Image (cartoon, rainbow, N blue to C red; front, top):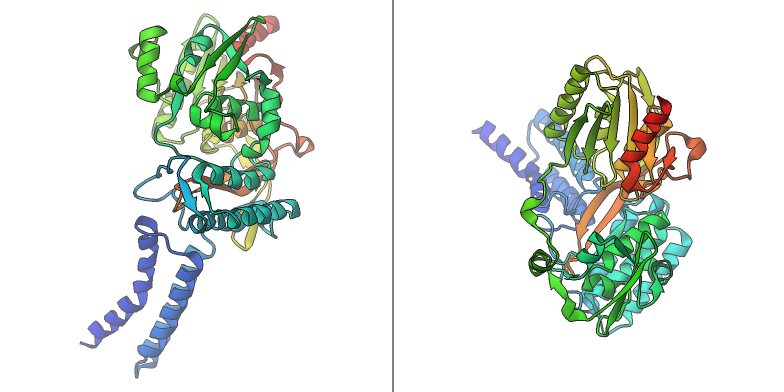
Length: 495
């Protein structure tokens, strides 16, 4: 009976740990409330469960201290508390952009967004930079003085603060369930045209007018974001184009040809209807597209090279098996050049690059230094030399990496490791973000608007710190569409 009573006390005291799965899977619990409640619960039980046995009391006190430390780590030091990353229901859709929130609802979302920013982002470790803090206060005053605000305008207001950090990973977006796409864009793309402007305003000028609505580190990536926005009705509205009037798309081709298309809101279709339209009118056949995985390779025995395409840095067993299979075939066929295509890779895990390097015949390579934010702690990690545990016989041939402005985050890291360690040649155009920047994101859904936001918690530095503030500039600069041909030409010249 005594044992059962003792176990009952332990279980009741430890019940505070249920807050962890409760928060993860069911409801958002304020981080400060969670820790204070836990502490009070543990202290209360320290008085209630007193026993005649000194050993029992000591054990329960020690247990209380351990529980308090566990809850402290899970709340005060855990950037992912209340994040969407681990939510069982996954990411939520935001409300329609034109939905009007009350002042109270909008302020709650805004204050929560700023609290996440202050608690997680490395630049806010000792408080937000003064100009960002002033902007945040002025935006809050604006919302507080309003009668209500639309979801889209709230998104713009929050982003006007986030964009000042010059961090492409930290931003807020409308997570809309159904966007509407301009139905004529596909045909112009396959005809070799790109959008050069809207309503006679060049994209560069449009960017100047809307740059506080976009988070980016390089101008080229900002233009890429802008092109994405202008392909949808909601995106146009977001960057400030009046979608209630006619909209003129100004097209330009690579050989200098121009064209104009004037549309109205009726020319924007939901995705299903858009695909039906381009199938019926533009020769688009979804069934004819190759259903590639995110990673695959091709062996070109005639040119003596293997092309490994990685469209997402997903560090999975499939990636590892594909990599192993490629190198096995490379060795078997005597291939002496490997091309890694990262031109459409938006990032993911940096372990993807480490795994690739493990197949190269190099004893070690340099990695970057970084700082990681844990609320009121900022933990520095020194630059290191990584011992390379070479897999197989070790590839000693030439390595080329193809990049574009769409090569972002971990894809940029991949290119940086190769270039700064002298392991290969970068070909194409500069990557979409900078080597000295932020990342390792934490994602949230704001409760009233449903807006999606993500915040960086890590600052990292370039491997070659003599080039700290420079982008990854290719060794061979060219149009990324022609990067593979540029590699073959370079190999031919070397021969």
